[in-house]
Length: 233
Image (cartoon, helix red, strand yellow):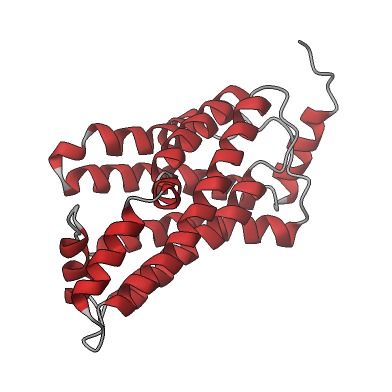
């Protein structure tokens, strides 16, 4: 079985915190997808959908923001180790993931404005025109690209973890393929989200368990002993 390349250099408390983030980040992501309203492609349809789900939007926005806030420390903790192989893939994937999480956090602010636009006291026609302008701006394209960037980020992270031997190989494959599966199965509707979320949850849960196991003296001694052997090209 593949083993970790080297032990995490974080202390026990930080490793546990990172493990919790790796567990709860994907859970918040899946929950946000479940409560997020179905929106159309036009500004009119989008505002109508947000208005219909106005009561659940605070929860959806909070889960979106929590996803970014939890994934950032979680992914850093996951990679807080010396990787003799796969470092370039992991670092590139991490950088793209951070960009996606930042874009996701910015979208929370934008969608909060959208919720305010659905207030009955606001001129609906004027808000539709404003939203049409925002949706065609380069700024909107940059923010909306975060989802597709995350697909590439997880693919690179999964490939890097596989190459480095961090955790079981099935977990690395699950992380790398979760976004790709979501895109490939998108014609099936909710099935794509369910399968993708299960892969993501399983993959990151395995990485969280790896961090937690490093808090045990037996696992820590075994990993420390492996790092004393010289690395061969």
